[in-house]
Structure formats: structure tokens, C-alpha cells
Length: 289
Image 1: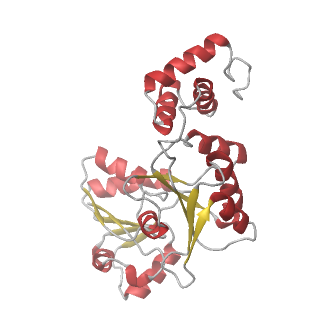
Image 2: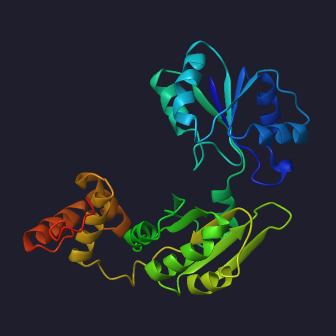
Image 3: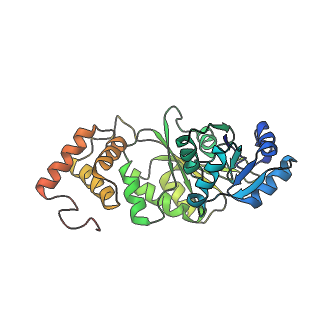
């Protein structure tokens, strides 16, 4: 059995009650950071009797087959990441997919989540939301991606590194408009927890002074009643930008249609029209290929 265990995002007292029991009984504990795992077991006063292995971005692809074979052989493998739930912008997806493909049971120990915690304290609508993960580190690609979902009506949640926060908020202000409401949640559940609320323009200006700690950004979705339908040429440009990044046209059309809240057929027609009229980046040799 593969057990995905949520770990505290800050305060160790937030650890789910089952976590200590699962750490003690697992045959193998796969940890994103074994040093943090030692601190966690010390906080929980638990002793691990199984084998501890590292499982992080650098070795995830290579170690997954080994762990899957142990699962198939009958081992109980517990996966923990540095904070929150495995697979959510953390290692885990490959192992879950590998286990499922081999018929291994996968379960979870529910625990703290920075996504849901930030949503709850943001003061923004939570009835419909989407998780966008980390924005691209590359300025051009980051702005292009943000522009693609400028018409998204659901509340959006992002993770970001503190040293990129100011640049990302500035890009969001450019893509979504400086008056769009947002919240920057810093060091959630920790001693220096802070939630800054305001417009993207205001938050971007405040972030220029520099920040520290773990960051989650929550952004209000677009107002569906005031947002005009996207220009067909803009829809075609968004598809072309995704294609330039390696996305297949069918998937690019679906992604743009979802982000813009438009039918896929409408986006497809826009792409065909743009190609016919010679208005796409591909026709001008600007796809970067």
C-alpha cells in the first residue's frame, strides 16, 4: 500500500493524528528532505522502524520504479514531503501513477494544505477556485501564461518563492489589471504569519521592499459580467504561444478555451482564421522554433 501523508505547513501541532502511527508502521518512508523528516519525528515523538529513503525532484524519476517494485512485493510505503500534501507542487505524482498502473492500493492521511488555508483566510470568494501552482521563472513565459487565464472567473491560487514575489505580482497586475483584488499569505500557521490584502497594484508595490518565508498568492477571478469576449486574434495568439512552448495544438486550444471561458470550437475557428489571414506568430516566424 502507498500512503500519502500530509505534513504540517508550519505549526507541528497541526500534524494529523494518524501521521505518527503511519510513520511508525511503514516499511519504507520516502521523504523529500530526510533532515526535515528527523525534525518532524522529534516533534511528534515517534520512532521510525522502517527504511528511510530520499525522494525529491532530483531523484524522483529514478527512484520511482524501485519504490513501485517494493509496493508490488507487499511493502507499505509512506510518502511525506516538506509541507502539505505530496503531489501538490511536490514530489508524488510519478509514484502514485506508477502504483496505480501496477494495481497497488493508494490511500492518504489528510493533512494541512497551504492552498485551502490561504483560500480560507484570503477573504476572497471560495465557492469556485483553481490551483495554478508556481508561475514560470522566465519573465516572458510567466506573463504569457498569466495573460492566458486573465478571463478565468474562478479564484486562483498560486505558490511563489519570496525572491520572485515582487516580479510575479507586477506581472499579475499587468495581465489581470492593477485593480484586481488579491491576498498574499506568508508563513501560514507559523509565528510570523501574515496576510496582506489589497489590489495587485498595491501588493506589487509593497513587495518591492522584499519578503521572506513561504508564499501563497490568492487572486480574485475575473468578473464574468464585465469581461468582454476575447478578441479572436488574441485567442489565436495564446494558442500560438502555447504551441511555441511545445504544447500540441489540440491541447493548446483546449487550454486556451478553458482559461478564456469560451467554447473550444470558437478558439479553433480563431486559429484557422488567423492562419488563413497570416496573423499568427507561426506565419511570421515568431514561434521560437
